[in-house]
Image (tube, rainbow, N blue to C red; front, side, top):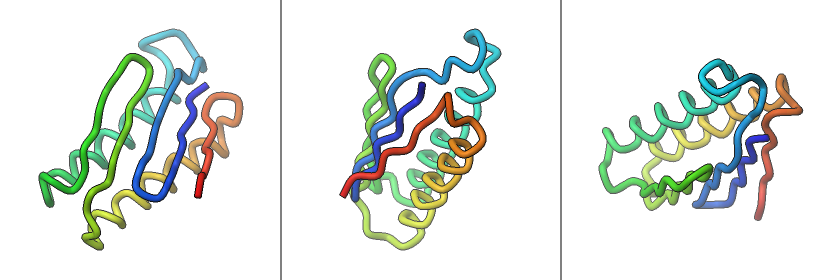
Length: 98
């Protein structure tokens, strides 16, 4: 299962969806596309808007900008992941932390 921990300025994504075998997993592909596209959009607007660290089965995103456009992209990313989680409850879980 993919777990997305959302905090005020930090998002940590861990795990695998396990919907299908590697290379055929539409949930993993969808989550990856959502996140990579969002990160790239933020960095194109402001290359210091966020930092990210990729580790095995883990991606940590630290949002360092208060730019409204950056925050809207991040909010859109989390909403898209939430919509994915509604459809694939067994494969992706969103955990909002204060």
